Length: 481
Image (cartoon, rainbow, N blue to C red; front, side, top):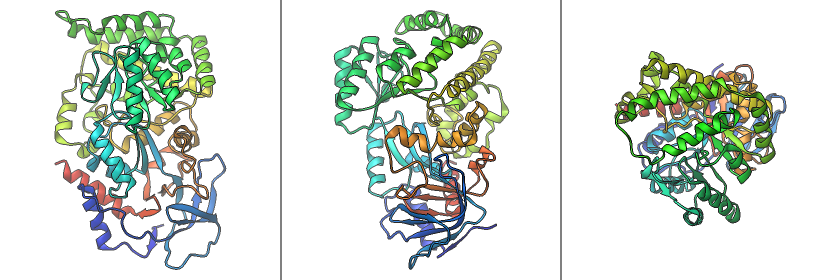
């Protein structure tokens, strides 16, 4: 059944979408009509059964009413949506945005109406947040940390605050908090005493801290210290294996050590050896104990299983010839083509990366089974062959493969991000909530892959139909040629 809308979008409206896409700041100044979706199936993400053939009335960016046969207000935009499925707007809880003019349209076209940016250029992020808040730019709700907090030497010196002692750590938290960032992100090389100072100061001033688990601490210590989310299941494998702590300390000892002749040739084999040892010594009892600690401390996991799958796909023509490469800037594509991590064709390394993916899936499956809370995130913009917007749907499918039901996977990108971020106005389809919604042509609870079957996106109460979404994708593809 073809979705129909009254009144139809004007040519001027379509042109406005293109103008915003290329960086102008004219979006959102006009009047937003009331919007009434007719006879849609609502999957509200609360856990309640779907509600079939109900109407949803949206007024002033909020959901005003959900019921059968709602009388349309005068002048309302009517959308006949029988046979369609309405879900909350999706969140990608781990991204790195470098070019909003490219990334934001791709997010929107894929139903991603909220993102948590976990590292990037502070000036750009600050400007984009302001433009989004003032409706001068079309894009997802943006939560950001600004520069990451790392030790010496920093992994990403272009967007890091380097802290080398406890005093530095406390001051970094205070400064980032005063600059208005939403959370603190810690990284690999933060020293142990500095890490705990960051944790204590973050708790004192009331700002969440998340991130990697630095090599100087264990995942248990990070959880006990109050780290709110652990990205990439970082450090969990070291705790689960009886040899993990020795391997972690070996890596820690190498930080800052001057490279010796031949070291670079040894790195892939060293990585492979570590992966194999951790996979061979997976301990069910240790895993259960760790999961119990994570549950008790309410430590969320953002597993980014898509990252592990990319690394497990070295040599795959599917990876290197993905049709979504048309949405990636040429300089970025060139960098991907020469990135050794995803092109290093050493048999032992390739085999170990496949084992690492299966290990990540095993850990995610065990943690989910034990009740550890999860969020869906991709690391798009941070890892090659991951794509803004598109890769979130891949991540949801991987969560289902790891043991989540389709509803649980959907909640990891809707209800749960809202809970994690403390946004009571978002994450579900209920009266009073923000009208950030996605209209699908097929049931995502029957098959999680159906989250890709997007017919329209509603952002802050404004309806974007298939023509607009296709226009955004086409403009993105044309822009990067």
